[in-house]
Length: 454
Image (cartoon, rainbow, N blue to C red; front, side, top):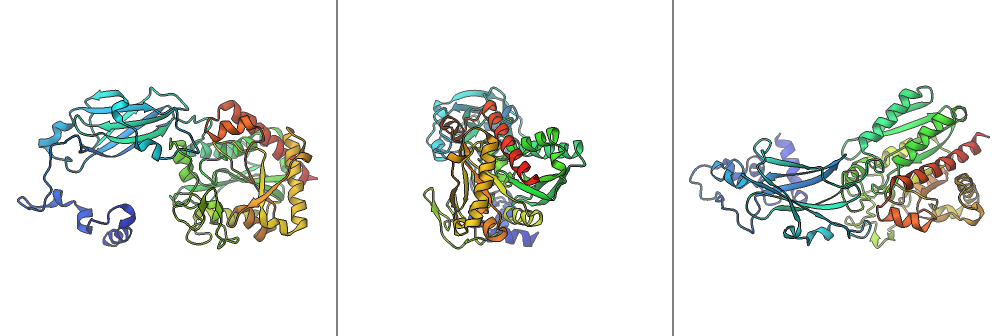
């Protein structure tokens, strides 16, 4: 116990606990002190400037939004002050002008609860005499909300922003695991499901091998949390198994449907703004050991800046997710790798490959051949009019794949259609749009599989 406390306090500045002693952390002084101790804080009446609730949270869960908060420690277990919690207030505000990909947490900081609707005021029993929880079922899918939770007096805890995302468009981690398991049960001769590692937060990283063929292609999803992956990949695998079992006796697909499930789940549960990095705040697609030391500047960020949305990590392959992907690819040796990106569960037809690949004409020729096959299979545009964008950076999976495996790898990015791009880049993907791109990628992947089965 002592060792774990010491380890925690070695990181206390990060946790915002730099001013606390170890003994304070084990038992706060105003709960542990002796009567008459002049060092004890005096419990005060709440004022308009003082909050009686702390550590508020709001998240989306299937068909409702859950709002919760704890009692402030000055009031916890103070029976003489318990009357302050005789009533709990919940405020809600819709945020229709919030823009995904443009607005982040700063959007919510200036919102005023006094302009929000009071949706609940009344008695609420706290769990363990400490935590209040409220479920709001009067919500609309696709809507961004901001909540505040307060006691009878004082400033409420908040703002607590959340978006009610459609679970048919943003699949929860549990859904991804369940659908993978169901495929294995339904097609035991053609499907293997394995754990290839754990995430930063110790979630199992799950992979599938679909097919019996030695030659395979690889699919990777949700390297960036707010982008595309499991909704397309698992749909493609399901349809291949249902409609093309004979082809899967000749070739295989190996897949990691969700490579960053920690932060993907946070996005699914309603974080309104775009999330990219993993739970360590490292961009997995800048963490691979391929020119990792080269500093890249894209989107106004620098990869050597820990605050940056493209931060490469403290060292190459520092992240569990990166290591798992590398080991997976080395073990299967795919002919080509497709990694799904863009935004809001949609990946389009734009293909980005490593800029280093331009050093090898034979590599470019192989890459272009796979790209043309994919485009032709998608059958929505003349493949001859399209070009691969050789621009993937240092530390990216396509650059690592080129340098380590000599394997063509693509980040699948924006849709060609401007209207579709405008819809997904603002997190307005609907079920019809998702189905369109699920079918499109099914056709493309089917064409690539047929090409390597020859």
